[in-house]
Every structure is written in C-alpha cells, then in structure tokens.
Amino acid sequence: MDAYILAVCGAVILSALVTIVLPEGKTGKFIGGILRLFCLLVMLTPLLALLQTGGSGDVFAEETGAEIAPDDSFVAYMFGRRADEEERAVRERLSEEFGVRSAVQIGWESVEYAYTVSKVEIAIEDFGIYGEDEHIFVIEQVRSRVSELYSGAEVTVHG
Image 1 (cartoon, helix red, strand yellow):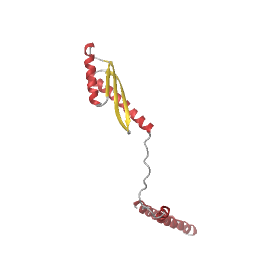
Image 2: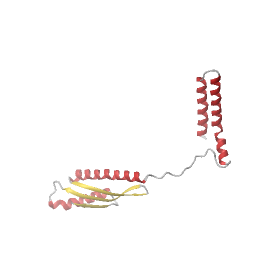
Image 3: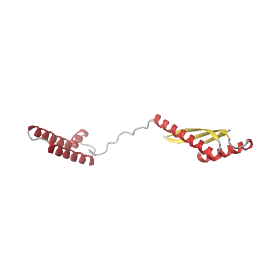
Image 4: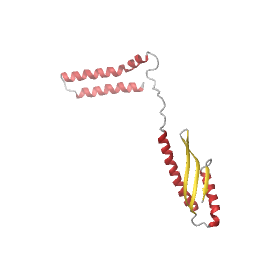
C-alpha cells in the first residue's frame, strides 16, 4: 500500500512541476492532458491488478518469488581465498610463536554453504634456532597449537 501511495504522490507532483514549466497554448494543453491521463493510469493500477488476479488475493501483498540459489563456483572461489588467507596467517603465527618456517595447506569443505576446515597439513621447512634434539618437541608444540586453533580438524605436522 505504501508503494501505491508513493507512486500516486510522485505522479501528481511530477505533473504539477511539468505543468508549471509548460508553455501556454495548444501544446501546453495537450501535454497537460497527457499528464492527467498518466495520473489517472497510476491511480487505476490497483484496479488493473485486481482484474488480472480475478478478484482473489491481496493486490497490495508483496510478491514472493523463488529463492535465489547461491552461485556454487563463486562460493568455492571465495572459500578458497579464505583458506589461502588462513594458510598465510598460520605461517606467520608459527613463525612468530615458534621461530620456524613452514608450508601450510588447509583442506576445507562447504557444508550447506558454510566454510569448515577439515584438515590442516604443516610441513616445517626450517626449524630455525632449534637443534636436532628439539625437532620432535617443536613438532608436538606446533601440532598442539594448531589443534587448538582448528578444533575438529585433522592436524598433521611433519618436519
């Protein structure tokens, strides 16, 4: 109903503004007549809709269309970008916390268009200041820390 009232008001205001600018004479009277017909048409639009529906239903009801399905390829692309950003963030975090250089692969899946991390694979390339005896300890710390970040995901760490 609000849209109908706004449409009628808009048509009346538009025709009033154009009437002010119109020249006097035959041309002005002709254009004024056209504007009056336009206003009348806008006012009669609900009656036309009522005739089309056969008298049943609410003319002013909002139309309910079918839901628009998300674009699967776009969703997959965006989730892939999100996984890339998370891989970068995990690499930086491991570098800051443990002083190691690593390669991170995040496996993700889309369940009902929700992003979930299913697998995290970390390959430590450089242990930095840690000696040979501390590699196993560092691997276990990294596995523990990443498991905290991604609970429910399978975490694999190797050096």
